[in-house]
Length: 451
Ligand code: S3P
Image 1 (cartoon, rainbow, N blue to C red):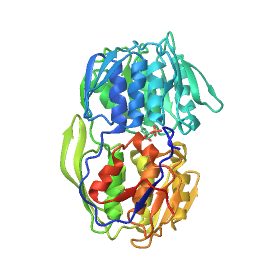
Image 2 (spheres, helix red, strand yellow):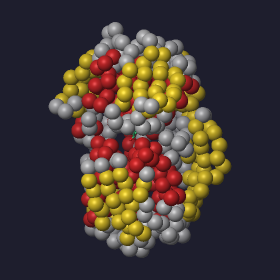
Image 3 (tube, rainbow, N blue to C red):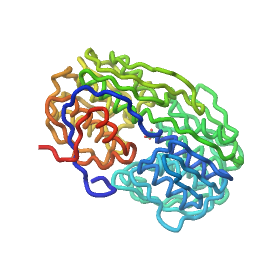
C-alpha cells in the first residue's frame, strides 16, 4: 500500500540508451527545514524550488496547523509567514506526517519547548519507526511524551512550559535527532550544545546561521560540537533550494548501467555531508563527472554527467562514508549488481530503521532477481553479476519505501527480464516526477503489475 491510496504496481523493462537532461526536484531535507524555520521567523520567508513531494506537503500542512501562513504560489515558489520563535499555536487536530521521519522528528523538536500539546501520527511505515531517539533528548528540555509501545507513533508531546537548555551527545548518526535538539534549543534560554561522533548532514546548522541564529561548530575529541544560543529573533529569508542529490542518484545510476547512456543532471547540491554516493561510484569505475562546479545559496552545486560504465568493479565502501550516503545504499546495491566482484557495505545499521528495513528489502528483492546477497545486522555484501548477466524477472515489495521502489525500477532498465514493484505509490513522497523524467530520458516504466 502506498499509504496515500491504493497500491500502484509498476514495471520497468530494458531500454535503449538513456540520453538527455534530468531536472530533478528540490532537496527534501532543505525543503522541510525551509518550511519549519520559515514558520519560526517573524516576517515572510520565500522559497524557490521547494520539493512538492508528499513528505514536504505534509510538513507544510503541519506548519499551518501550528499557526504559520504557508502559501503555494505555483512552480515551486512558496512563502511562509512565520509566528516567531516560541509562537507556535496549539493545533486543533492530529498532526499527520504521512511517510516522513524527517518531518515528524524535526517538527517534534520545534514544538517541544513551547507550552502546547500536539499529537503526531503517520502511515504504517512511520508508525513503526523508533521515536525514542528524539523524545529522549526532548525530555531533557522538559517535554513529556506518551506514545505506543517501543516509543512509536501515534504519540502526544506536551511541550515544556519552562524549558531548560541541554547538552546532548547524539548516540546514533542521525541528522534528524541532531536537528530536533537544535530546533528545541531555539526556544530554550541559554546555550544548547549537541555533539555528534560522526558528522551527518549539516543543513540545519547552515540554515540556522542564515536565519540569523547564533550558532558555532568546533571539532573536539568527542566529535563535532554545535553550540546554539536560545531565543534568537530569526530573520525571514529567501531560500533557493538546490536539487536533491538523493533524487539525482536514480538517473545517474540508471545511466551507468544502461548501455550507451549519457545523461546530464544539472544543479545538484554536493554538500560533502550528502555526496558520498558519487565518490563511491567513481571509486567503482563509474564515468561520472562534475561540471560547472559553483556555490549557490551557501551550498556547493555542480552539474553531474553520467555515462554508461562498462567496467564497474565491486569495492569495500568506507564505513566512515555511510552518513554521507545513507539514503543511497539501495540504489548503490543495484549498480553493484552490474559490477564485477563484491561490493561490501559495513557500518550501516541505520538502514534497518528507515522507511523500511532497507537491507532486508533490497537483499530479498535482489535475490529474487538472481543476485547473490549476504547480510548481517549492520552489513551487507552484493556479489555483482556483471553487465548483461543480471536476470531480473521478479516482483519486488517496496514496503512503503520510495527509495526501494525506485531502486528496483532502475534495476529493470538494464536486467534481462522486466522487474516490477508491488507499489510505486510511495515514490510521490520524494520524487513525484520520477516517471515522466525517466521516460523523457528513454526509460520504459509502466503502471502495470509484473507477470
Ligand atoms: C534526513 C536525515 C537522514 C536521512 C533522511 C533525511 C534529514 O535520516 O535518512 O532521509 O533531512 O535530516 P537520519 O537522521 O535518521 O539518519
